[in-house]
Length: 58
Ligand code: SF4
Image (cartoon, rainbow, N blue to C red; front, side):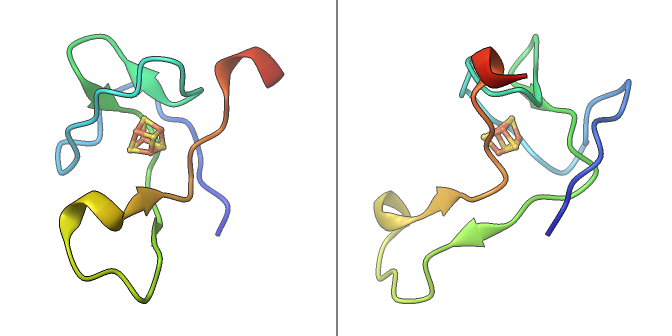
């Protein structure tokens, strides 16, 4: 799922991953949509944002 980087926060998402391409100051995510995996998770600690892209790669 390809996400588009917006010039404003996605109000439905709080994120603290500061080295993500989509991260915005104030613990915001600027992706228009995100994907969370994996299907087999049984607690929140086992889930991850699959939309994450390292800032350094961009
Ligand atoms: S894409 Fe995922 S990891 Fe990156 S800022 Fe948004 S919620 Fe956080």
